[in-house]
Length: 388
Ligand code: PMP
Image 1 (tube, protein in one colour):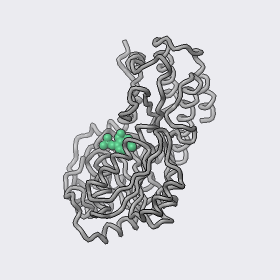
Image 2 (cartoon, rainbow, N blue to C red):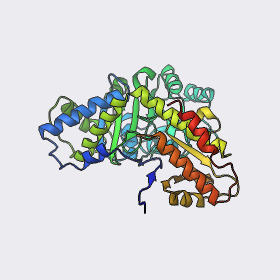
Image 3 (cartoon, protein in one colour):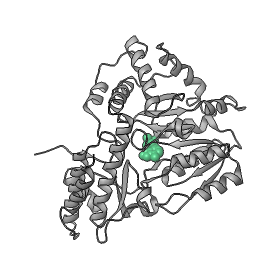
């Protein structure tokens, strides 16, 4: 009997054995010389993964939502204007967080499965002249990936700092923080970064640090305040110990291990692998006659897919796919949660993983009496994967 299953939900994902072994090491003191060295290297490696030369990394115990909270708490003061480009549930969450810190938020929305048009976003920037423009690179509720470079350029042209939620994107979907002029990117460990849940990661440009330093009001969140964490991050990078709050030592060991694997692969190869595996999966779903939540192929994310159940099939498909050995997720957008499912293809995902997933979805559909040409999805995917 095979008790193993393949976890293909959009976080947490399957983790590499070397990363899990790093977590299992005896916990060192957070001020031991070896840990100081490991943390320092991890901070340097993070810069390479975000493709920034001069970003300030923050690695803090917490989930992705804390990373969002840190960005908002430090960058806005009551009355500051923020424009949020919304592509789903997590963009709306980011808007809520900014509002909690007193920002005047304007949210630019589109139909579910669409991204707001450039012209509409530009209009909002013209109308409001915000301090910040916020976007979600991949909104995990819709599987829509926005053109971060285009929006960040627009923000820059309007004198706004750009903030990107990269929780479901960073280290998988193409992202170039310096070249694209992104000011803040927030992410978390449990997705394409490849480390079990528990680390909030934030990369801040020098311009955004200047905006933080120019604040007149105190940061309204003690734990999140850059003032508490900046000296710690700087100390570890200078290979000196520091203390504000006890770091999640074993998770930092795991982060170090995962970043080494990521950089060994190389960012360009990694972006390409994600893009191809995504295309393979998305081609398979199309061939099986399943519609996808993103309205056009160019909006479909490199890291995950959101797919409608076909007619006469409902969410019982998820249980059947699980019995076939692959775990995928249900829908998340409250207004249509029961109508679609979500599949992750990020991190160390391989061609074998995605073929196993397509096969399990096919067998699940068969058990739901859905009519389709058995094997056609796998064939479509194989054709794309041949280019890996
Ligand atoms: N943003 C996005 C795009 C996400 O996918 C998630 C988590 N699914 C979050 C933010 C929140 O992260 P966390 O669950 O780690 O708090």
